[in-house]
Amino acid sequence: MSLPAESPWQRQGWFSFDGFREGVVSLIFLSSFFVKVEPAATDYFAILAIVLFLGSGLHFSRYLAPGMLFLILFLVSSIIATIPISKPIIHADDSPYGYAIGLMVTASSAVFLAGYISADPMRRFRQIERAYWIGATIGAILGLLIYFRIEPFYTSIQTIGDNRLGDFQFRVRGAYKDPNVYATWLLFPVVSMVQAFMVGRLRIGLVSLGSFLTILLALLLAFSRGAWIDAVAATSLAVILTALNSPSGRQRGRIVTLAVVGIGFIAVVIAALLSIPGMQAAFLDRFVLVKSYDSGEIGRFGNQLNAIPMLLRLPFGFGPYQFQEYFGLAPHNTFLNAFSAGGWMGGIAYLMLTVTNFAYGFKAIFTRSPYQSYAIVVFCSFVVMTFQGVQIDDEHWRHLYWLMGIGWGLVTAACQSAENGYRPDAFQAGWSLGGDARDQDINEPALSQAPTA
Image 1 (cartoon, one colour):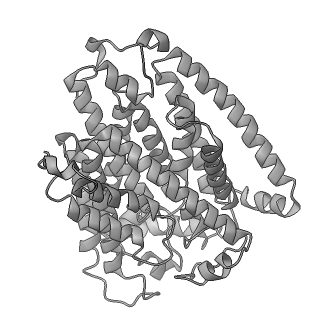
Image 2 (tube, one colour; image 1 turned 180 degrees about the vertical axis):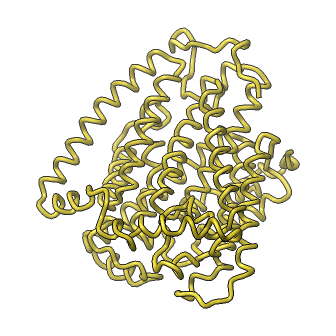
Image 3 (cartoon, rainbow, N blue to C red; image 1 turned 90 degrees about the vertical axis):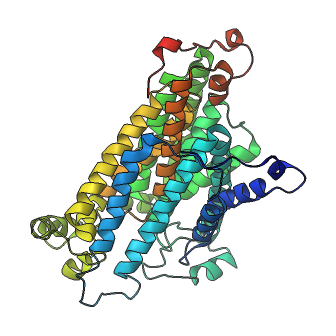
């Protein structure tokens, strides 16, 4: 299903309505570096973008019906589960209704981005990618300024918004409440910039390298074990899949060369950081997989095991934000929390949504289309972040739903591209390959090999 196309006048002159509303979409990602105050500016821009695109400019496909069905069921379950809650809650901010509203806002942004990307996949993906890079660079610079206590940034930002989780003076968190959320927000820019350097979508220069290294340093100094694992896994997987799927032998050689150089450079950076006594102690502390608060009967893992038999007897679960009423701590497991906050329907719906998203990723990554390289970085980042839900509650992470929606849009584009047949110019542009195919050593896919939707 497509909403009506834009009128010709909308792209005429120095100002156009279409340009304005696409600028609002960019602001979703540009402003995402500051979320210490809820709702954040990025939420307002997301809602405004949805309103501006209600009449035209979006495209939705039948391919996304299963994912949207399970997402809706997951949302509905969280609303139903609030009905039987009558006892007070620990924190006034942890309202069961707020849980459902937060899910609706983030899920709506995913659905919107799916329609936004699939209407003009190549141009709009690159627009969002670059806006995300800029926002992440600003957030990384701000995070490092605060980390090194540079005034007036340190005092002004540290005192703004909700600091209930702590000040995290020895971990970079920028203008976020939690360094773990902050670090995973930086994941996609890191992975996508690595691929963009390798395929030539982003030119290697002083500004681009400076931006990348700043983001990478902020991610490292956030000291988030989950984000570290995510970054290594997603980047490695993205590089391998990009090299294997690249249609150009010359490009594959460039990818391998830059991968070797990059691994060596990052090893030198980490070694330099570890040579600093204070940094070495912090790294060693965070390299421990199981902390004291994880183990034991009333630790994180003990609470999770104790909750399972209880949830098997409660079709509606405990209700949103009620796990901590029973155990004193949040579940720190998104899959378990889906059953806790949404009951059996919510838990099953989230599991099916996860399986469906993984199937979408496999389809988009291994379908020969102009959007294949984009799908690789999106789904590699999304899949590892989803697995991180085993040790943290990420069902409200904006960036997780952004990747879900962008991935859905790329799935639609890939399937429709396969239906419409192979176009050499679009295919080469998707892999940042131009000019004559012989000069680029491109292995063009045969039309008979194009996957069917």
